[in-house]
Amino acid sequence: MNAEQLSLLEMPQTGPEGLAYDPEFLSVAEEGELAAAFRALPFKEFEFHGFLGKRRTISFGYHYAFDGSGLRHADPFPDFLLDVRDRAAAFAGRDPDALQHLLIIEYAPGAGIGWHRDRPSFSDVIGISLLAEARLRFRRKKGEKRERCALMAAPRSAYLLRGPARTEWEHSIPAMEQLRYSITFRTLREVGT
Ligand SMILES: O=C(O)CCC(=O)C(=O)O
Image (cartoon, rainbow, N blue to C red; front, top):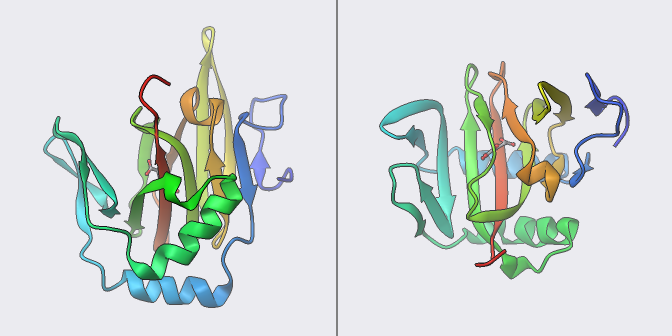
């Protein structure tokens, strides 16, 4: 990761520990094919305790419902994403079968994602960006202050959130100006860890 990809706003370090980045994870051709396939998917507005967000999502493997019901089984991963899953697993140094949750998000212009940490049911998060660059912002409390930094996630790139980047830092993406899709794969946290 170089200084242009990771802007260190108030941080004297190289970024959240546990954040890894591959700027060229997908080819241009793969990105085009995936985006074309995504246009046919039955996305639904993201629902959070009865409120609808601007982004639209679809989950495979498992679905996490924010209505109190939590993690449930969902349809299996589509075949056309199995190769991407295998490469995402290799990027994270994990077995492909460990990537059990797949979430595709459609961010139309004006849609973003607010500050959050992923649910404790999940462990590693591998995110792949399509079509537009996103400013993946990070923050965590340090005493009375907050540390902040941001990763410019380029189209066709992949990032990994693990360890402190996943559990100590919150992340968010401001409203997009252009259509972006993200693919995120998650491992499930083992009980007792
Ligand atoms: O779109 C992205 O890359 C981030 C997705 C995200 O933060 C999430 O699904 O919790």
